Length: 230
Image: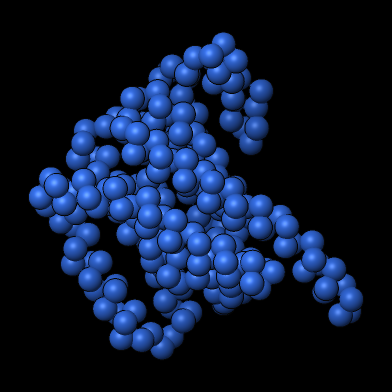
């Protein structure tokens, strides 16, 4: 079974027999999915640059995503987990940072609070990524990142619901983020990751799935509206 050039037969075959796929089966799958995540990120960026607009995008949502991905990546890396269990977090963090930078660019002039948040992140992030903080604080930060991701998604989900539109959100990006979250749930379970890591993957799968469903739900009414205007 292949989709978008990715062969899922090996993974699905293992799941049918009640077993998690082996590393030799999962690693090529993860590698291709990570490549598609980068492509998906590019489509979002190109869409925003093409329209010169960040219509419908919640700045706070993407800022909180950057914080959440930074904490999650730092925790998994410094805990010595296998790269296959968290590899996509590095690409998602890069994607989120680029998107925030673009949103800032098209949201000029920026307020003092926005500049303060950006500078604070640049000052604190390297220390967190290096794991140079108290272990108890590190655990507390990681425990809080699930709430951070929820708080990151809720403003965007609510904004979409209120506007009955998803603005410049990219279907491909949300689709690949959703797919990546599903894969991460399985890889985290297979690699024996802590329950908190698995919980984070499940939250990501749920929220990304919600955003994806909103894009599908609100796309048709917009097309009908444009047709009537013509």
